[in-house]
Image (cartoon, rainbow, N blue to C red; front, top):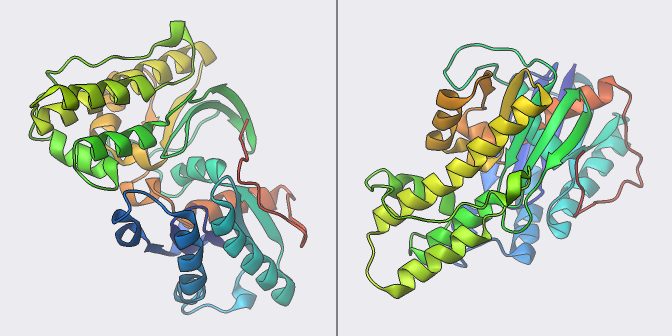
Length: 329
């Protein structure tokens, strides 16, 4: 069963074909990082216009060597995300489904990130591994820091979320404060490699709650830099450690509390090898993490999620709309 996935929730235009929810046949991503870097972040109107320019070429490239009669269904991200960006992908997906008669599945972008763990079955240590339920999912990206218990395909229970800045957003803002540019996550990780985490920064534990808060550590970084000279490398390493401490401790505690069989990492921040390494070293249960190119936004994860949705009979109508604030669990 081959599914065409389409992803346009933010600033990546992506299309992919995935077979049976796990085998990647094609995976094409057109990034807009260079366009938005000059602004220090994603400009929604610019992003949606760029999607209009690139989505047809991206789908054509993903479909190279295949025809529509080879495809069994279409999966499209319909939320959460930027409204204008989502509209480009959803409207084109509906047009393709109408023209080809293929079933259409509207996909939750957060759920799709989780399904990146089904695409290449490897644990953080590089060993081949299968997903086991129930599993504790940590979704960490620019807009989300969510803890969910996944009890089966399509069955999620929310355990914790961000109360203010998500982890990825905090990385972007810290990088801007340190003059490291955009996107902030890779810049912080690279710079931290030559520094020492010797600067004391706060951790928001929230009285044992499963929720996250990273606005405090970001603000502390701003005050630190504005008070005077500070080693950029040490500041980056200290910030990365502060975020990692909270993510790792809260996730492992939630996994123990929920009796999860595994921890599944996903989202752009999961591409941080230092954070992934901490989970591998400290978690009492196996940790799965997608390779870096599947942690960031891509259409293969959308197609993988679409396979399980369509297999369960969850199809969308031609009046499907975008849901920019869509949640999960």
